[in-house]
Amino acid sequence: MTYAQSTALSRSNYNRAQMRRHPSYPGARVKEDALKPMSNFITILVLVCLLIVIYLLQVNTTNSYSYVIDDLNRQQTQLKEEYESLTVEATKLESNERVTSHDSAAGYSLPTNVYFDQ
Image 1 (cartoon, rainbow, N blue to C red):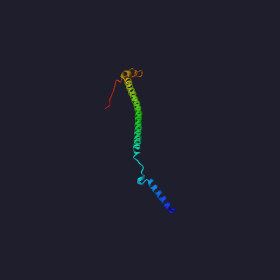
Image 2 (tube, rainbow, N blue to C red):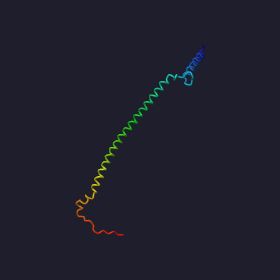
Image 3 (spheres, rainbow, N blue to C red):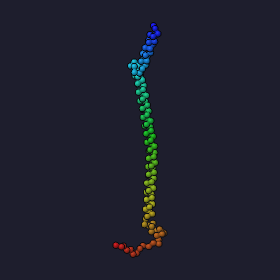
């Protein structure tokens, strides 16, 4: 065998090996069927974990809002009670008996002659 023949033979063997490794070569495909079940399981597991995290965040946010709402409801009932007590106190202060019995009202007299212009 001559040098040229041995070089051509090694080049052809090299080219065949390169073709087998090339991704577009049909025989060079990796068996993806063996990886699919595991990759599907991992993908589903990651999605489930993501959904759990989103759910927990939503529950936490809802609970924090419920504490704020409870505080506001408590404050509202306190303000209603205070309003009712102030209303009762205002009606007591405006009563006719209190006004006439007050010290400053003792010097007042009722008008005797009242005239209306027409």
